[in-house]
Image (tube, rainbow, N blue to C red):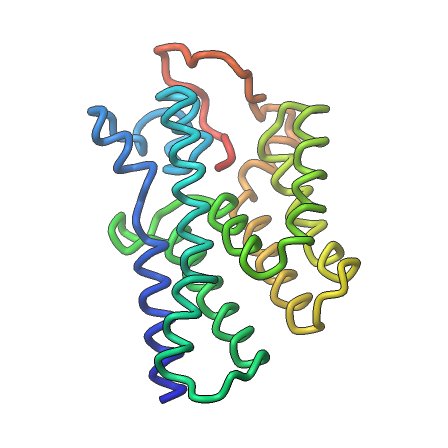
Length: 221
């Protein structure tokens, strides 16, 4: 039953994460988000191309996917398939669901396994698994973005700090290792942005209504 529980958790979490929120929101407005701006389906590109309301909606929806998988789904499956209330097993259910939902977002099966960069979905997972660590890296994200206006630099900086935040807030060794893996995945998904930052060609996020012309590729989401 435990194996079935893990399998069901991973499958449902992946499918939940694979819902391409940004693509669907843009499609409803007659736009293929993959063909404009950075081509990414995440919240930042939606924000730039379709405006604040659409971008904020995608951001919250993608974060909700992560929380639903790592918290609600985990508890439902755990209660159904596991007879003993073992905190360590519950933690592993949450970890499996969290990793699966992020992979679903980053590599959605509905768009030829091309998705977003997982920052918002990861935040939703972290709310469920390591909320104090999330607060630490959220502060880092806000400071870096305020200083530079680079979404990608803020996201990479926060991701890099994640395992250290987990350590500082007293998380288990298992959770520190998992957060390090999630951080590495997030940084890997920003490899093109990092190259543009080094080249000085990355574009800053300007908090105004996006212009009608397509933006230059290279935005984080």
